[in-house]
Image (cartoon, rainbow, N blue to C red; front, side):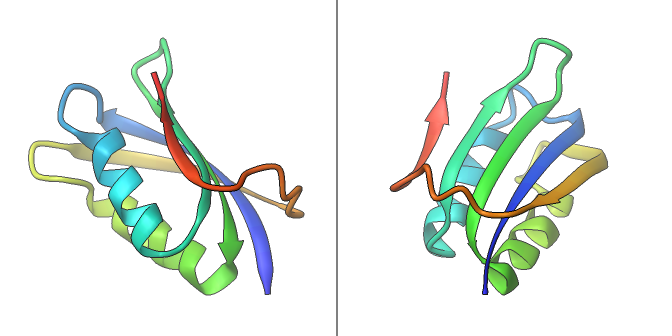
Length: 91
């Protein structure tokens, strides 16, 4: 079943390779969407794909890459919009 998730990741998540970690993880899980830094220091992830793979992404993001310290995730589930054809990093 296809789904869409919007995740805000809070903690020490900028300047530690978090976007690249998310990019590699999402690509490995065959998800489409994007990851970007926000001005408040959080990271935003929007992803679509198999719901099981999205749940795996959430678990991976809770851990993050070495050097990151994830304090909280804000998660919103949505109906898929199928607006993405790949996963990318927005600078």
